[in-house]
Length: 277
Ligand SMILES: C[S@@+](CC[C@H](N)C(=O)[O-])C[C@H]1O[C@@H](n2cnc3c(N)ncnc32)[C@H](O)[C@@H]1O
Image (tube, rainbow, N blue to C red; front, side, top):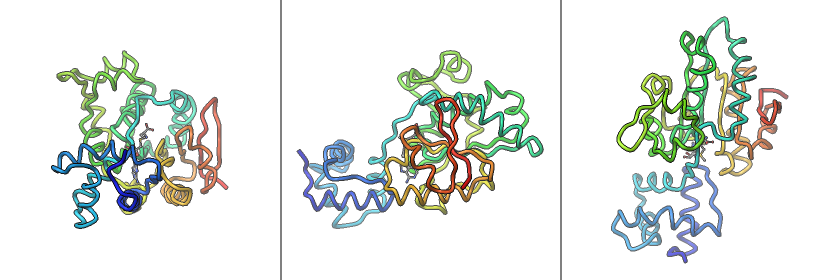
């Protein structure tokens, strides 16, 4: 049961698409209701229909942002999917470290990092498997997301017991986290490596200016966009990468990569992309 009229639902879908490129289709009314009901309550309104009506009749910028934020899907976990991390450890990072030996500099971008499990997994992997380089090289990891809430969480580096139970080896939990109340906080030395900021993938001016990116992880976010938007984002990202850089997508997104100036490669079960024909 939805409390929105069709017109209100369409208005909301247009708003979310304009602000984030996320496509919500008819049939997803239940999802919108469940995500926006707490906001309607907080605003003292009877239901989501009234919340959308408020936006229709008086465009309220802060509320727009809150609504778009609530419509993002932030599912993530430490070392998500396992295999890509093996490829990073065994092939991608060793190749990059060899190629950048002269400058001893590495620029990584985790686009759509959600609450931070992905960039922190990378930071831990670097510390564990490449201690020499992670101690002495200039390694930058930009971690960005559209969602204000997620960016704040990533910056804070605080995770619940449930979150650290998902994908994080116990030895790493002990080595890189401190207990804080009911939660676990990431060690400051790793938090410092990350440059965490808000960036909207469809607003190129908001994206990090890193001067030649070596590795882009943009995983499990392109699925929310239409094909034209995916292609545009990948073309833009291609322009920010060095010619021998690496691009990693989510496992269900790999069909997208080949279309926008990238060549597809495979190692073990992992598909990755590099600039190419
Ligand atoms: C499912 S999470 C993926 C997290 C992580 N990359 C992973 O694979 O585990 C998708 C993230 O994309 C972000 N997102 C959605 N639209 C975005 C946009 N237009 N620009 C930047 N981030 C966006 C959401 O806020 C959300 O945190």
